[in-house]
Length: 71
Image (tube, rainbow, N blue to C red; front, side):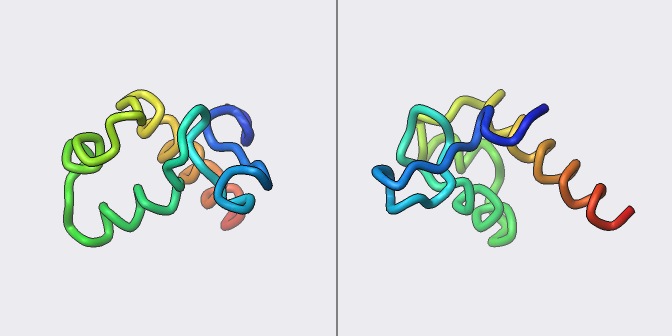
């Protein structure tokens, strides 16, 4: 899993905020939803341009990056 695969940054899209590839949905919205007690399905319902596989892959990438930083 490589950064830049499912999450991308482009100055022309939301000023460079990391978003799900092919969308204008910020990645940060996903952890914010989960932190707020909402489910992955609720996130996907509210942001239909993000696939479940993309959301899961992004969470796995975030977990890998965090674990590597702690190790």
